[in-house]
Length: 193
Image (cartoon, rainbow, N blue to C red):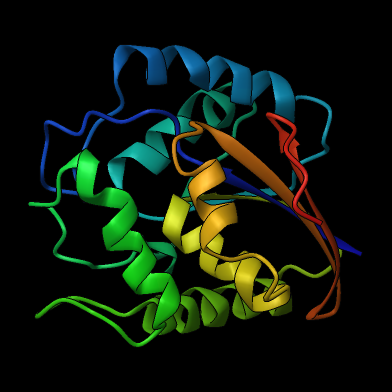
């Protein structure tokens, strides 16, 4: 069995509009220690991440304390939405459009279907290369939600909104080969299985 711990990044500083270099807030940096503590007894074999600063930084404390190099995988990045101008008040309405039409996208952006396909292809490659390992993958809210939706299409807009402001959020998924067999949110505990 292959176990994957998806770590949705800690709280990030939304005043930085460039998603790729957006840092963690002070609270986010402090919460990295909670991620390290959670992973302490999970017998992790490899640490992978989206290349975005906030995901890498969320895993840095664990990686350093346990002598891992974080391997960045470009295709685990967040959806390219060009939504930098969307304010918090309009976020729910904006996201409902993505979830009601997986092919919806803003000009120059990416659809939820495209984000999901990219993340699933990367995940399948990881499963093929690292079978029977315990793996950490640093990820993002929409990217992780698209993965959960792929393996259980009951995970939808309402579930996404429930977790959209939980930082960090950890979901464990177990696989035999590339076949998904179970998943659950393990920290903070919110079950969607």
